[in-house]
Amino acid sequence: MRVVSLAPSATEISFALGCGDRLIARTAFCDYPPEAHHVPAVGGWTTANVESVVALKPDLVLTSTFLQDSIVAELRARELQVCHTDPRTFLDVLETFETIAGALGVPERGKELRAHTEAELRVYVPTPMPSSPTVYAEEWHEPPMASGNWVPDLITAAGGQSFLPPGERSRKVTLNEVQQFDPDVVVLNYCGMERVNPDAQRSLLMTRPGWDTLRAVRAAHVFVVPDSLLNRPGPRLAAGVQAIRQAVVAAYAITL
Image 1 (cartoon, one colour):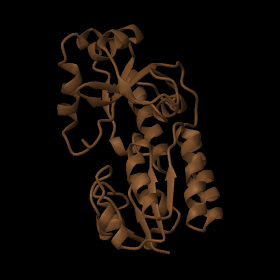
Image 2 (image 1 turned 180 degrees about the vertical axis):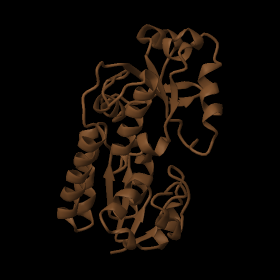
Image 3 (image 1 turned 180 degrees about the horizontal axis):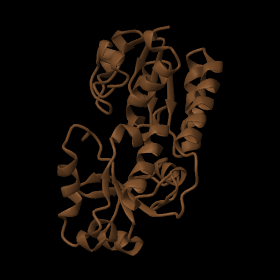
Image 4 (image 1 turned 120 degrees about the vertical axis):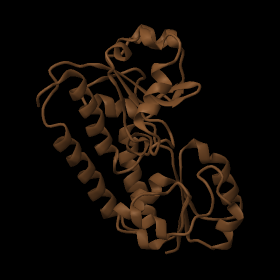
């Protein structure tokens, strides 16, 4: 089977399912696992070159989230087989493992990957938190955008209380909204900024006018988590839960 993956999450899932050798193209943002770099790129995540994809004559194209709806429509209009997933919650993400595995013809591996990811969560979060701190996660800085979709589920799994409810889309927020929530901890998972110095990322929030009124900012409880561990709906979300938990533990010097 010749497969094109136009989503970093789908690429990770394909490799985790043992089907990485079927990929004949990916996006420039498909950077994990390292083996993915050996697969030719056909553009960006939302700017994939459809003509290049069509020319490859794939048996299957993998896409993800509503941000690729227009690309999906164009691919299907060209009569290509597309497996599109649009998870909103962590449960949805787990279900995408099975959906993609089915499309790749390895349904049992999808069930195994789901079970493995669920088991990882139990390892990463072995004991309950002594309290349930409030956590504000932000995926972009200008304008400020709170992390939604499955990220609130990850915060809950890590023992915290999320600013947004599970399943709500990431959205712009005002200082007043966040002040009313007044989080104990702030987690920054800025899209595409994994290589930017963490201190520089923290300053983007901590130096905004008025944001120094937040409890988390005053206490310097502002932590940076690699965006691919939270924003990418794939097998490494369990590691994202661990990263959030470590931030909370560091903020409160909790001994687990």
